[in-house]
Length: 260
Image (tube, rainbow, N blue to C red):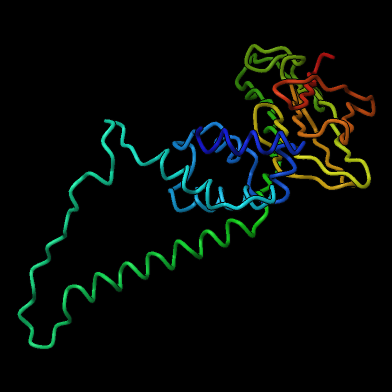
C-alpha cells in the first residue's frame, strides 16, 4: 500500500482530521493532502518529503521507520519502470590541476557534498518549525472616473462651476460607481481550533490554523469562499448575518456572494 494511503488510514482510524495533523506538525494542509494522495510532483525534493513523513507518523504516535521504508519502495522506480538501484553509478571525472600544492579532487567533492547537506538540513528544520504563511488580503483597486477635457474656443458650450458632466467617455455615472461590498467575518470558538482557507474575489486571503477566540474579517466586492477543517468550531457571518457550511470532501465550505 502506498505510504500516503497508509498514513491517511492511520489518521482516520485515530479519529484525527487533516487540521489536527497540520496543527501538530506545522505543515500546510495542502502539502499533507498531496502526501496522502501520493502526488509527489506537488511536493519538494525527497529529502523534505522524508521530513514530512517522519513528522506525520510522530503526530500519530507511530514509528516513522516503516513509513520511510515504504516511501523508498514507492519512489524507487523511475517513470520507465527501471529501478534506480539497478542503474550504473556515474562517476564525475575532474582533471587534476598541475599546481604543486593543489588539493585532491576527492577533498573538494566531499566538501561540496557536506555544504549541500548542511544547507538542506537547515532548510528542513526551518520549514518544520515555522508556521504556515499568512497571506495579507489585497483589496481590489478602485476605479476613478476620468474627467472629460473642457471645450475651448468661440461658441463652445460651457459647464457651470461646481457641476459634474453626466457622462464620462460615453459611460453613465452609475456604471463607474463601485459597489461598497460587504464584510465577511470568521470567528473560532474558545478552546477550539480549525484549519481555514479563505478566498476573497478570486485571491487567496488567508490559509492557516486559527485558535480559539481568534477573529478575522475581510471586505468583499463579489464573492468569498471559506473552507474550514472543523466547521463546528467556526462561525462565519456576512454583515453580521450567520452563514452556514456545506460539506465537501470532509471539509466545510461556505460561499458568500454579493447577491445573497
